[in-house]
Length: 227
Image 1 (tube, helix red, strand yellow):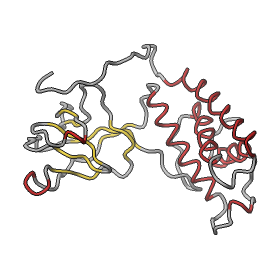
Image 2: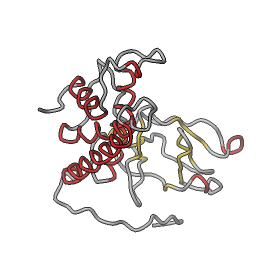
Image 3: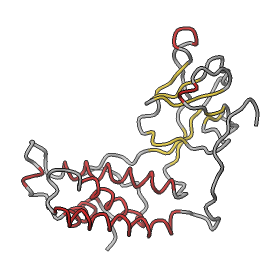
């Protein structure tokens, strides 16, 4: 059986945590049926996304609309723009900036938030904002390439997760639920959930890379006035 619908994903989650939609512990605070389940699934599937991206999976990628920066160097110490509401992680590694012109040409160098006193064509992430360093001179039109979050689970959600990796999402969701007071299976159940996560990760690890190119270890990023 494939986890090819929200209902089947919920059923798999309830089986793994030893519960069901009628469990009174899941509605003690006035929650609707499946509300706690859907919250756990949202947390778990997004955790699974991050894990798969770390393993080299290339999905959930999009480009933002043209960025429109606010603020000024004198008043704010730089300019900033809110990240897209579905932002999960920037696309870019080592010397590859996630900021691009319309042509695809990359712009700028990533620095740490603690280096916000630097000047020049640099950028950094602060909370839910993208900041430009002081004296940065971006092109007129600039876009952000990023991986986006899986949408919130619910009856009408459009599943946006590869079928072969959905059990990993279920297992990660159960792991999140095992830390809740309502989790009914005790320590033995928590160990079973942990084993399910380990097994699901092992299976997904073999499928995560979408080419035959082996995963490579990369040196730490270095920042300077030129590359």
